[in-house]
Length: 206
Image 1 (cartoon, rainbow, N blue to C red):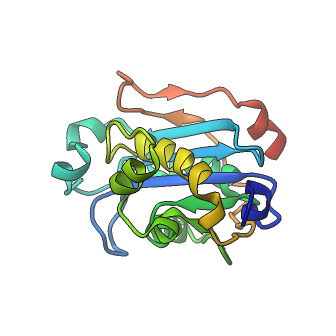
Image 2: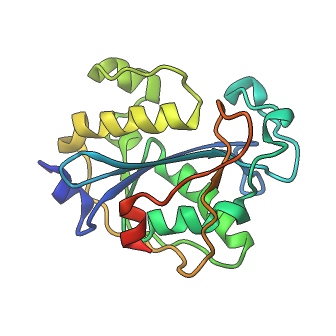
């Protein structure tokens, strides 16, 4: 494996995903998600992040720092499903421990009866064999704000560029089409939910 084009396995872009969740089990829910879209040249062409109202207690606050108060006004996954799906569909998915993040996203889509499909993705955990903070330290990638979805996704994006030669190729993922897109997000630093304008990539994909 020598470059991102090979790594993407025929996809026209890569989407690095990170989720913060109420726990580790299939019954747990996403409380924050970040998606960083990379071109095949490694340029960041879109970033989507939001807290998510899980419809239950947030549980693991000691890990991710998200409290019940922070997600009171956050969109539910149903609210953001269309915005997430349009970014994932046709992209090669990347994560540090991809099986976990994919399972959590697939579980959320499964609850609305529209599951994801993925034959292969790119897992930087598999490529490096160590936790994200250890891998970042090893390959000289800055990681500030660990266990914030946006910080972890950004660090994983940079890590991917450093370890591409170690990665097995992925392939385009499938996500449901036709879901409404609200553009509604609540990021950790937002005082209230905001509506994101559609970036050119999403207009093109939609």
